[in-house]
Length: 69
Image (cartoon, rainbow, N blue to C red):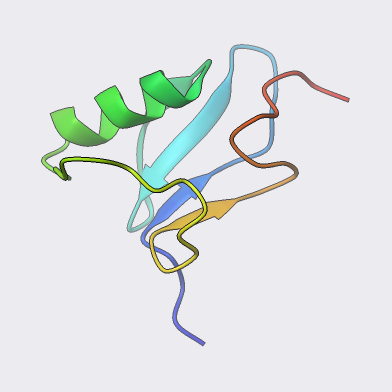
């Protein structure tokens, strides 16, 4: 099974870590931060489809989960 290129890691103190092809790009506090981080890294698209499992893997909660349990 092919792995999604973008992984949004579980919520932790300071936000969720975002990686692209295994490279740590930074931390996000909301979906808009994920989009900004990816655009800065050159991963451009006109819109982000957060539930596209071919692009995104959301660990321990989707784009609506930002606080630690």
